[in-house]
Length: 200
Ligand SMILES: [Fe+2]
Image (cartoon, rainbow, N blue to C red; front, side, top):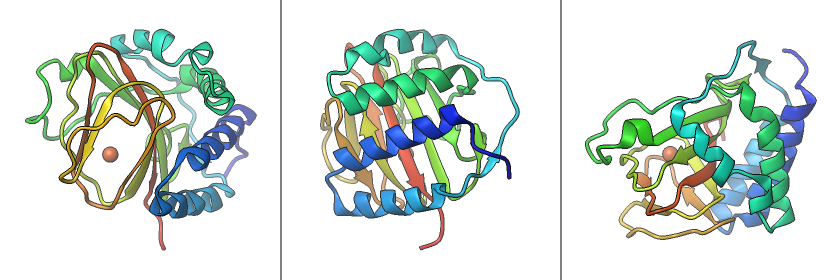
């Protein structure tokens, strides 16, 4: 185990505070408490360079700190901007049958904490998703429970819900194994997710 760099610690402090402040679901609050407790112990720091995908050009529009009126979200965006050059942006694999045809060039995900992240660990997965306009992300499911903090416009769906718009600072909770998806209209989407894959 190595020490956690200051910029990563600042990002985790700002983002966990914001996740907790915006979460409305008690299950999300409980999940975030487990995540916060686990993150008190740093994981293994990865030594690697980041890498962007072409769609990441949209970050200048959708993740710019000055976009955010809420001080806590602005702080998250500022801390994210410090880390972003070290992130390895990737496209999703797996079943794309429910996605729009432009999915491959129209999205990118980056793990910050978790497998393949800046901090490698298996109990907490914390990262971001970016969608270009007019992109439908595929229906997908995973065993860990998940809390989203949405940083832009964009629509979500989980379980048998219809599409809904959490809005900037909106939060949603995905119980373990629930099918979920997101999509954009004429604006890009930027959203953060925190998954708890540990014990208890
Ligand atoms: Fe998910």
